[in-house]
Length: 195
Image (cartoon, rainbow, N blue to C red; front, side, top):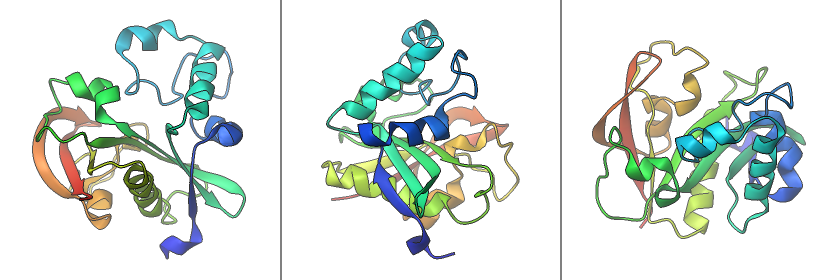
């Protein structure tokens, strides 16, 4: 499927409802997702409960740098990718995800495609859009930490980290092994140099 079918836009304040569609829980009282478990430290993640999680993300969307990008099929939101400077994320202190060097890299750690659009080629343009956004913000390189599943099926609840194959199709190369695992598969550090 051609990457021109999907448009990718920054997750700005005016698109918050679309962010909520992609990463918000079905019940506003639920204390899950909102793509915060890898964006904030574990204490903050535990303290943000119910609607406070959504309000925190609403504030992120209002910042000068968006917390991610959204993919659209026409006017309908179909995908989300979280992207931010690694230095702002718990990955900066991770003992499982190594640092390759001292570059102020950006991280893409969540790729989510809406049910009904999965298997239709959304992931690649979504990842490419996240890279494009990071590049526009001055990122010298972008990293991802996908599973190295060797083409085997990944449980949907753990597939948000992406697969090595999608990152390779977007031009990333393996830069390091990690000690992280997702869905029973090892995760690898993939890097795309933007300089």
